[in-house]
Image 1 (tube, rainbow, N blue to C red):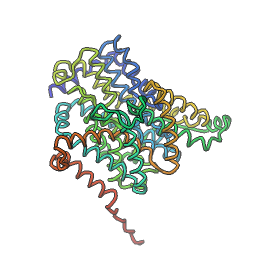
Image 2: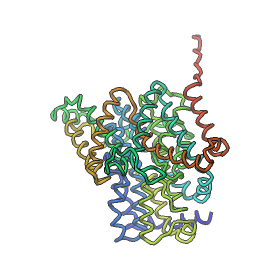
Image 3: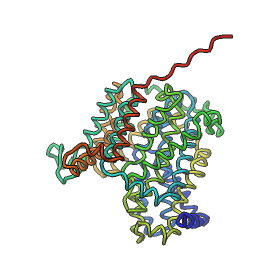
Image 4: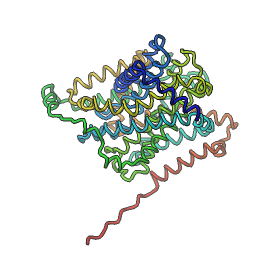
Length: 508
């Protein structure tokens, strides 16, 4: 409790105009990088890392935290408007948000994404400040077999969540796992599946796959219907009337989603964020799948579910708070962004650990406060100021819009890896994803399989190594057994259970 009060006291540094200016600047930078395909918050902080040498540690940490929160939120902007997630964590938002956009409810979809991000991000920041030591202890209870079962749970849910295409979902997920095996073995320094070439020894980076699967494939899909002319598009743009109040979700819709749904998603996101390497993609998908399995309107999912948007966005923004726990307590980054933030701490001579919380709360307080303030104030403020311009992205002529996106995406894939070969892979994966989408194979499943595949393999092999090859280890560990039972429950709830039919009331 004393640590919590010390951190709260340290947040008073945000009242300094200079610190506040760095936080706002960081949020705007994070919003831009997060919304552009291929330009993520990780890249934004990496590019700004040299600046941290020339400014004080407090503004540097505050700026990093606001970029993190903004990048996680702003991925929903292009995910909703043009069906291209600005970040992998916005994949589920693209599924529902773009459907609403096509139905003429783009402002409403962006409003629900912002509200979910605001609630989830703020709750995640509060949980981080209040329960950081306790959360760290709980995360240590999940051992290697439990981590394997957690990843297995996520992969199983990925396959079964679309009941109409389980076979295709399985194939797409398996393809993602197979792509992830290219490169250095996860446990031994031995190259595999590199076809004898040095260019594949380092494996396939996530950015070419993300950019290819979403940006390039979307460009190819849209190219089939490029019939717009500049004049007709500009004429349409004049007729688009978006009022700022349209971005405020009606209370009836918020009540229909329910406070419990927001809280559940935020806790899921925070809990998954604590696990090193899990990330916003896994948090958003697990929360989305849980919301879908318990929804009163599951038929809306995939067709424009506001509940699905809220679940995904609340979880991936709450993940930001959870990801700081292992980094601050043990020096173990929870995701790529916190890995770079850890570098900022080390550059400034700060050593992560419990003692840092006790002795340097005045430095950490502003950073944690920046997470909270960015979620609670800057997210709705940014939407209110720039929301109409976000929606009008679609009024740009398709030829100009998607050609520009293709250029930005390819440049982004190069900047992320500084490799012409990886940039070429983005084009290759784009063509592959294009044909997959034409045959109704899920590119989301492929990407999630790629993200989670290495963790599944290494936790499986480590668990079997510790138990001398005995698979019973997954049943004898309580944490592993818990996630296996949870997997069985989801399989029953999604595939086996039959929804109760409502009996029609007889006319009076």
